Image 1 (tube, rainbow, N blue to C red):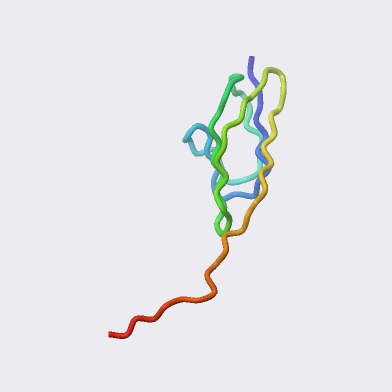
Image 2: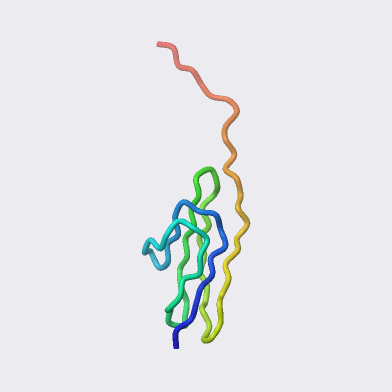
Length: 80
């Protein structure tokens, strides 16, 4: 049976079981039911890494919270 995984995340890259799957919010179809490792990346935000299970005859949705990376407000200067 073939099933689907819906990824709802504005990303720079989507990886499913380590394989690059695109850069936009999408539904990935034709997946065999079972567990998958998902990595979502976006510049300026923390990567989201997790595992999800795709069930027969269902769309499994992944909608993680996008957490901005805190940019440092100060730096250092070395004078030699």
